[in-house]
Image 1 (tube, rainbow, N blue to C red):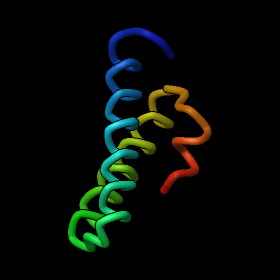
Image 2 (tube, rainbow, N blue to C red; image 1 turned 90 degrees about the horizontal axis):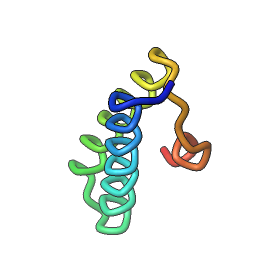
Image 3 (cartoon, rainbow, N blue to C red; image 1 turned 120 degrees about the horizontal axis):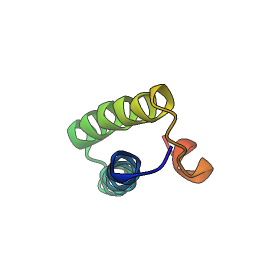
Length: 61
């Protein structure tokens, strides 16, 4: 899938990946829980709507 929806999902995936990395680096348990939840929701949303995301992003969590 392409278009504005797919672009928005991919951007949110990149942001979630960054949030995960930052939380891990800072040993921020609460931040990590929030970032993991957002990550899982976005990966599910992408799959359900046929939005391809970078395989490196998918494997990040």
